[in-house]
Image 1: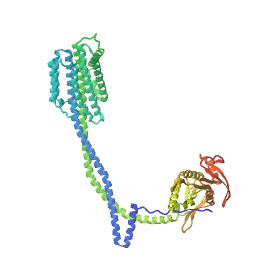
Image 2: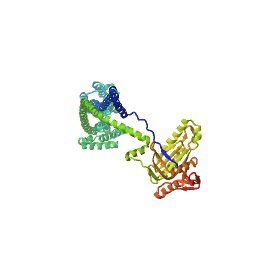
Image 3: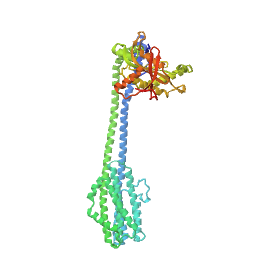
Image 4: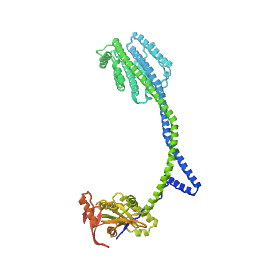
Length: 631
């Protein structure tokens, strides 16, 4: 009768972990007490060093969150301080632009419109109005603060109020002295529009420096769009005055010019309203509907541009100019309200930012004060815990050492599974299994390959094979029994009972090994793959611990012997199964209705040593062309 035994794996060397190091220290300490005071003092020194290291670890672990919190507080306080300074600068820049640039742009727009109207009408009476507007513009320049620190390149006359006033006075004197004879309306529009665009650009730079988040940024954008709407509306006012003073547009370019400015003014105003709900509400309160109705009627007349129905009319031109001026003044009120709202929000942001700086400074102060106190308490508690735990740990180490010795002795005698069962139940009775499936395999021509290979190559070859097979058996409900040379033995159904699943589990393992061997090359013979003979048999067996001097866990029974005969009478690269295994596969499918199908083909009747005539089969990966018998 063939007997299979499992040899326990020898105990591996223990790793040098901190716990084992302390165990060693404790053991040596006891020896030192017996051998002399010197060794005991030496071990105490080692233990104290370990305790000091633990204290330092606790201190460092406590310092990490404290330092992190302190750094976070410093970073937040620094960022808040920088943000506060930035808000202060932005308040000066944007606030100044809102308060000063808006007023100057408004006065220049009025001056541009009146100058164009005077030139187109040729009425000397309008000159007095124009001179009065000049004085209002000069007064606006005197009342604003003028700081030109914008990075954009601008003409030199924007460097100071005085230089810009001289620039305006030069243009005015040339215009008034010649009565506008050397100046065209496009020249007037270009002169004032260029200056207005530069001033609007200052405001744009301030808006770009602000963080594009929150309501303030949208208000700044809305303010800029409102300025652009006023600018295009001012151009529309000037061009419309020319229309009425001349009785229509004689050139299509003038008509297109008017239409472009009219559409642009409306479009910028609509977009500004979309960016600011505050502006939407203020618009309803500021705009005079009667004036806007008159403006729309006169716009419709300009859009027709019917020369037959129109005559030059200074009265209509003046009415158009006054209505548009009234509308632009309403937009100025909107501009002022929105500008004040922006300044108020900037001031509010500055207050909140300053409060954050104070809060983060308080947090930093708290961390710096309480941190040392926390560390001091941690050190005291750690020393106390070490003192109490030292005596308890020594007793624990003594118990652990005795347990380790007994476990090591038990594992040298029995496999770990049996040893654990022995510890739980106090005995390891032999077990009988009604039906298991046993697998044997060996390497074809192993003796010949060993003869031409070095011992190290043989070891590497077997290690490669067994690693591959071990990886496969983990996927199935099987148990590796032993390896003897090139022989590999596996059982399913023992020691873990799995009902009638042992046969299909073993069949799937055998087919998986068959597929794996097709691609697994011999390390020192890379042009050759492993070839195995595989034999499988199903039947009863017994298992238990045999011997007392060197007890071993063994499998007994004729089933094991028959499985070995299936392997030895098999053929290279084929899976040889017995009639009992085939019937077990059929029984599982018929009884349990599982969706598994295995293909076998009849090999024939063989004279098996010790068994006599037996009908055997080949287990196939896919259907055979003939003699196919699916299970």
